[in-house]
Image 1 (spheres, rainbow, N blue to C red):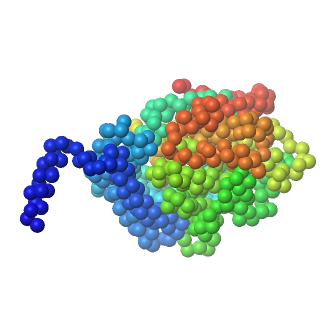
Image 2: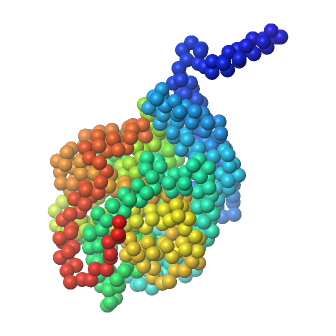
Image 3: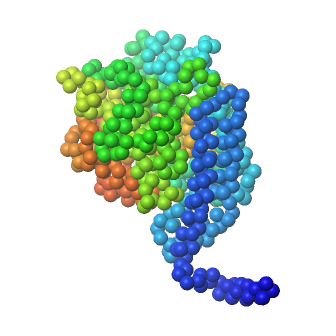
Length: 606
Ligand code: X8Z
Ligand code: ZN
C-alpha cells in the first residue's frame, strides 16, 4: 500500500508537466470526446424520459386541486435541468469545442447542442432555474385547467371554435369570442414573471435575451430573423390586402352590417385569434367538413396514417395507439387535458405519442396530418446514423413543415376524389377553392411572421412593460392583420396569453411562418419535379417517390445544415417565391371582386 503513493505522485507530476493525459495507447481527442458524449447521452436520455413522462401526465390529466402531477413534473424537470446545466458539462463542452478542428462534425454538433440546452438551465443560477420551472408548470396548469364559460355555462374550446364557425348572431359570437379570452386575465402576471425569468436564465450564458436564444438555433441573430419575417410579410402583403378587403365586405354582408368597417372586428372571424379564415368560405361540391362529418374521429387518424403508409412509411408503432391521448376528454370527466395538438418523442426512439382532441372536421383532419408529420419525422431520424442528441429537425421550421405539407396535400381535390370525400363529377369552382386555401395559408403570415413574432420580440428583446401587453398586442393585430377588438380591451386583459405558444412554447412562433415557406417550396418541387402535376391539384397517394423525397429530408435529423438541406432538396434557398406563385391566379380574381371597394391596410414599412 505505502508504495503506491509515490508512484501515483510521480505519475501526476509527469502528467501535469506534459499536460498530456493522452499518452495511453490508442488515445485520441476524438475518443475522449466520444466517451464524454456517450456518457452525457446516456444520462440525458434517462432524465429526459422521466421528465417527459411527467410532463405527459401533467398535460393529459389536469385535476383541479390535485397537484400530484405538477409536483412530479417540477421535480423531474429540476433534476434534468441540474444535469443539462451543470458546470461540469458546460466546461467540458466548451473545452472540447475549443479544439473543434480536431473533432468530427457530428461531435461538434452534439457539443453545441449540449451548450444550447445548458443555456436554458445554467447551474450557476440554480434558484433562478428552479423558479422558472415552477412558473412554467403553474402557467400551463392555469391555461389548461381553465373553465371556459358562456353565460355561466361551461363550454369546451372545441365548442367555442364551433360557435365561431357557425353562429350568425353577432351578440352570440361576441360572447364566444370574449369567453375564449377570459383565460388570459389570470395568465398576465405569470407571463410577465416568466419573461423576466426566461431572459435572466439565458443571460447567464451570454445570450442577450430569450428571443435571441431561441432564434440562435437557426444560426441567426434576432435582427436577421425579424428582417426576414418582415420581408416575408411584405412580399405577401398585396395578396393579404385583397383578402382583407374581400373579407371585410363579405362578412359585413353576411352579418347584415351596412357600414363596412375599416378593420375586421375580431369576433367576426371564424378563429379565436384570426389566424385562419378558411371556414368563412364554403365551396360547392367541395365541402370537406360535410364529408368528414359522416366519419368518426378514429377514421381521421387512421386515414392520415394510411396516407403516410401509401408513401412507403411503416404503420405507426402499436404503442402509439396505446399511449397517445387522441380525443377530447369526455364531457363529464373529472379531469381536463391540454386541448392543443402536440407530438411527443418520449424516449427519443420509438415511443412516440400524440396529444390531440380530434373531432371529425377539416381542421382536425389537417392537424392530424400535421402531427403525424412530427411523429414520422421522430421515427425516421431515430436511426443509427443520427446520435440521440441530434434527433431533431434540420431546424424547428422543417419539423413543422413536413406534416403541414401532408396536410395541404390531403386537402387537394384529386386526392379527396381518390378518398371518395369529393365526388369526381362535382363541378368545383377552382378559384373559390384556391381562395379558401389562401384564407388559411396566406392569412396565417401576418399573424405568425407579424403579430406573434413582433409581440414576442417586444416582450423578450425590448422588455415590454406589463402594463402595455394588451395595448401592444392590439396595436400589432391592427397593423399586421387589420383586426381590431370588438370592444375596448384594457390592461385588465392579456389577450396574447390566450394563445398557448405565448405561455409554453415561447419565442418560437416564427417557426410556423418559415414552415409555410418551406412547405410550399417542397410541395412545388414534388408536384413539378416528381409527380408532374399542377401544384394546386396533386395526388400524392401511393407515390413512393414522394415518400422517398420526404424521408430523405427527415432521415438526417439535425445532423445536416438546414440551408444546405433546402438547397439539396429543391435547388433553391428559402424564400416565399413558391408560396406566392401558388396563389398568383387569385390576385386578378380578387382585384376584380374588390374593384370599387375601399382598401384600408397600409404596407408595413421595412
Ligand atoms: O401549434 C400548432 C401545431 C402544434 S404541433 C398544432 N400549430 C400552430 C397553431 O396552432 O397556432 C400548427 C399551425 C400553427
Ligand atoms: Zn407542429
